[in-house]
Length: 204
Ligand code: MG
Ligand code: ZN
Image 1: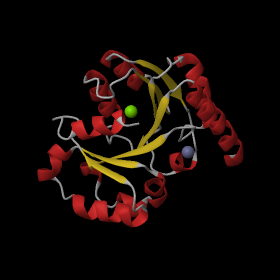
Image 2: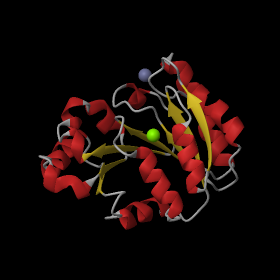
Image 3: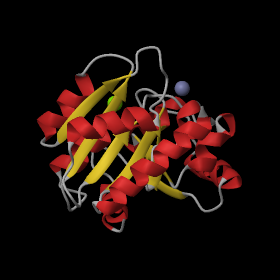
C-alpha cells in the first residue's frame, strides 16, 4: 500500500514541478489551528503568491468554506473512515482544484499526528502545527511525525500565560528527534511572529 502510494506521490511531485507549483503538507492534531493559519495567511497575502487549498477531513465541508471566505480556491476531500490523505486523494483533489501555474498549494491533512507522517503526497515540504494547549510532550509521543517534518509551527502562543507548556523543552525534544527541523512559535489570533512564517513561505 505504501509502495503504491509512493509511486503516485512521485507522479504528483512531477506534476507540481512542471507547473512551478509549490506544495506544503500541513499536519497537526485536531484543533491545533491549521485552517486558522491558512485563513490568516491568505488574508494577509503572506505567501506573496496565489494560494489554493486541498482540505482533508473525515466529514463536513466547513474548512473549505472557511478558506473560500478568506479569498482562496479550495476543494474538500472527505476521507470517511480514513484518517489521513493519500496521494490518490490529492490527485483527485487537484483535478477539481485546477491550481494555476506558480500557485502555493496547501494540502491540509486530516487532524492526526500518527499516519499522515507515513504517506507522501508529493509535497515539497511537511509542516507540523502544534498548539500550546495540547501539551509539550507531543514530539516524544509522536516521534515519526516530528522526524518527517521540515518545520514545526507552535501556535496559540497568546495562551502561554494560562497553560503549562515549556516551549524550550518542547523545542529540545523535537530537535533530539530531528536536529535540522525548523521551529516557529506563532499566534494566528494576535499575529505574533507571523512575519517569520511568511518569510519562510516566500523563500520556498
Ligand atoms: Mg482544518
Ligand atoms: Zn491514517
